[in-house]
Image (tube, rainbow, N blue to C red; front, side, top):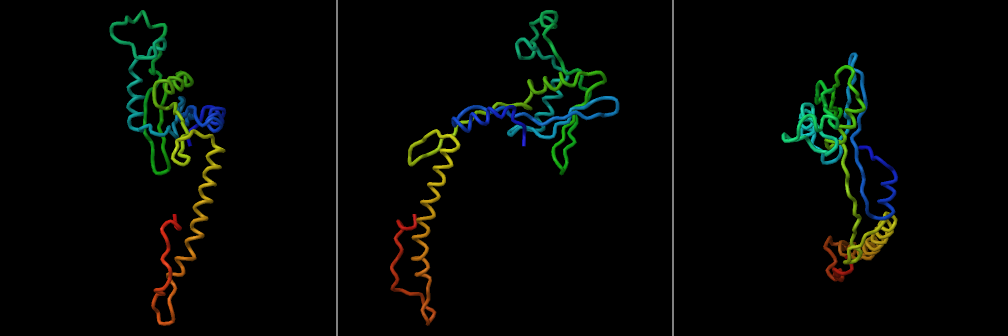
Length: 199
């Protein structure tokens, strides 16, 4: 599974029936010769691997403005945003080494590059970290109701009791219809099972 940034977020969603979860890709650092590489082993749900690789490659050459949280446009001078600018120039290569054993994306860094800084920029400007909203609305009867986890479990077990009880009423009557007399003919005098009894 992907990593959840905070267990408190999960507990809040379970307790209130709504909230948001931060889902983050799993990454670790590996040594490649004298350099380091960020290896991505799992990505968040709905993140496309090919699009992610293209996005990282795009960020290698694109300057990202931290102050405004969007790429600097041409009408902003270099001197105006240079103090707030970070790039992924520390990345030397991006490779997809995925195989039948699982996903593996390698972001290889240059010598003396700050791996922690590259890690932070990747989380901020790619889909390696996503915010997912949760709203646990269920139907109780015909009315939509937001429930916490315990209320949902209670309603589900109550529903299953009704289903099993109705099946228990229906099975003996159905078995009677399938009985055969000594001549091998079905019993025709058996009472037909009402549809309402099997619902």
